[in-house]
Length: 101
Image (cartoon, rainbow, N blue to C red):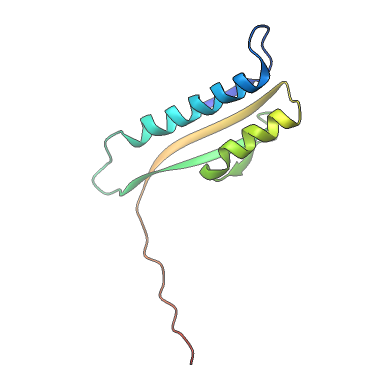
């Protein structure tokens, strides 16, 4: 999903529009997570970017999507850019640290 979301609408008020955008993003993530995984992958990972424009987009974590949308609403932006790309990933084990006594 590569999309520039508009935060202005002639009939829909701002907070309602923000909720609709959050719902659309959540629905997209759920749809992608439910797709069949390749045999060599454990889960679907997401590469996310957020910015006031496409050129100024920076990498963010999936858990920061809602915060970024709220940030755009609080800064009274007319629009913002959001990019979410899905990729298969494999879990890695955390290294066990030796405890010093």
